[in-house]
Length: 261
Image (tube, rainbow, N blue to C red; front, side):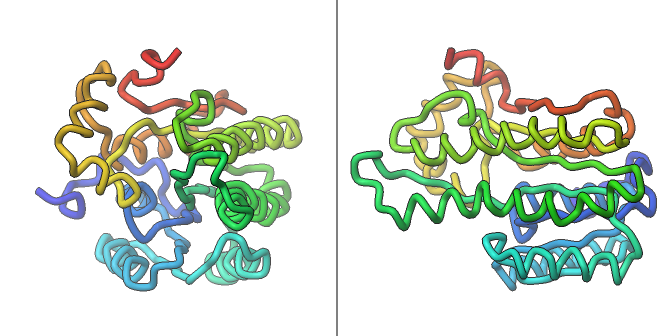
C-alpha cells in the first residue's frame, strides 16, 4: 500500500489551512500529504516546479484543495505573495510549516561568503520572512500553529557543517524567541529537529552501504529515519493535542542525539 492509498486515521485538521514550504519532495511533501489525509487544505511552495506539481496532484487526489506557487524563500516579495494568495484563496490560514532548507558540507576555513549567505538566507531568513508574514493573521484570529524544521545539528556540531550548524541553531532560537513574543495569543510556535533522515539531501551519502551502516550503528533505534517519521511529529505539534507545548524543539532522531553528547 502506497502512502497515497493509506486511509485517513483521523480528522484533526478538517478544513484547516496549512502552508508547507519545501513541499516538492521529502519531508515537505510527506508533511503536506499527511495534512491532506487529515482534512486540511494546503498552500505549498518550492523552487522545483516538477516536484511541486506532483505534490499538488497527490493532495488533490486525496480530495483536498491545494494552492501551489514557485517561491524562493529568500525573497520577501515571493513569500508575502504566497501568504496573500493563500488568504485570497481560503480566507484564512491556520498552520505554517517552515520546512524549506539546504545543507552545507564545506570545511569552515574554505567557506566562501556566497556559500555562507546561501545557507543562512535559506535556512534562517526564509523562516523569518514566513513567520512574520503569517503572524498578523494568526494574531487577528487568536489562533495559529507554527512548526519550524531545525535539526539535531542545532545542538551538536558536524564536521564540515559549521554554517549549517549555525543556521539551525539560529532557527531553534528564533522559534523560542517568537514563542515568547506571541505570549497571550493562542498561537503555538515549536520546532522539529530531525536526525538522519532519508531525503534528497542525504540519499547520495546513504546510498553508500558503509556510510549508512556507520550512521545506523550510532542510532539507538538502529534504522535511518523516513520523511513520515518527521511528518508525524510535525502534525502532532500542529494539532490541538499539543496546545500546551510552546517554544520547544522535538528531536526526532531515533535516539541519535543521545550518542553525541
